[in-house]
Image 1 (tube, rainbow, N blue to C red):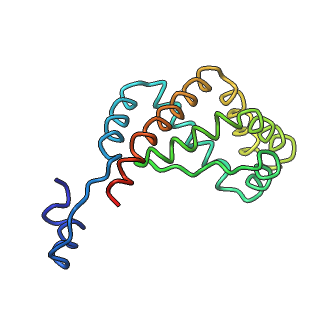
Image 2: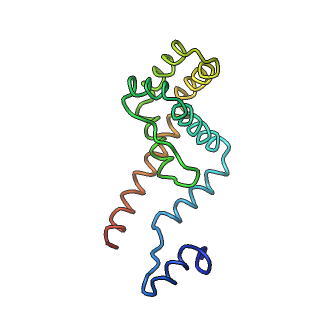
Image 3: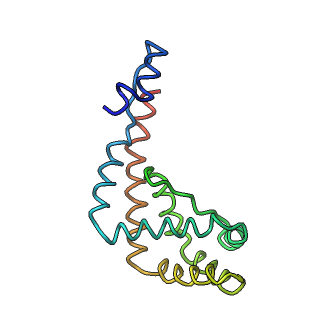
Length: 158
């Protein structure tokens, strides 16, 4: 197991002899989903675009202000390795798709930066596409199901 001999796990067990390693319940499903999604080009593009949309807003206080005003919800900033962040981002795009499109329109019409205008224009039709909505919905349902399974198991360990 990774970290067993030279990682954090080994360091903690060296310092605290009675410490017990408890493996994360979500680790294996995350690995499976990561491997499965990396095999499909449409899904890879989907998550890449989700990441781009998140970065688009998070790199500009002006865009965040427009997002807060229009959508009234921030898009969670994802992580390359944590699927629960990708799930939350996917949920937000699915639930607030129309408001995000309106937000993109506001950015197009008010921004003075050509790059921001072009990005907003390119993301707007992407959010609208039906297959993106289906993928976002599927991802959100998958993680809702995982939460139902994982939550009781993690409560039993406490």
